[in-house]
Image (cartoon, rainbow, N blue to C red; front, top):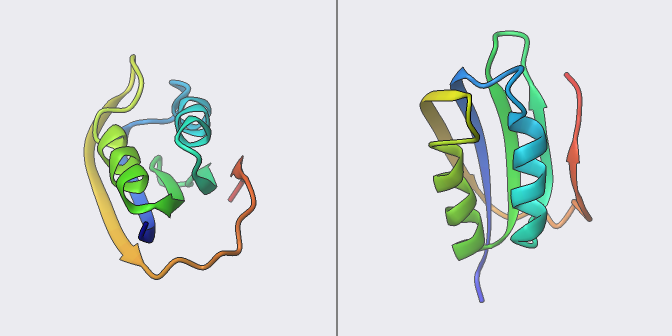
Length: 93
C-alpha cells in the first residue's frame, strides 16, 4: 500500500467550533499520524500521514469539517511521507 502525506490549510469559520478535536478524532480513527493546529490568521493547519486512501479521505473530511463550523476553502500540498510522526496530535503555533 502506498504511503502519502498531505499538508492542509483550512479557511473559514474553523476556530472555536471544535475543528481540531474532531480532526484529531477522525485522523486517529483512520490510523493517521501528524498534527493539527490553529493559526493566528483564523485558519486551521494540519499534516496527515498514512495510507494514501486514508489521507485522501481525511482531506475530503476537511472540506466540510464538523458542525457548527463552515469551511470556505482547503489548500492541499501533497508531499513525500516523512515517517517522523508516531501519533496524531494537537499542537500550538
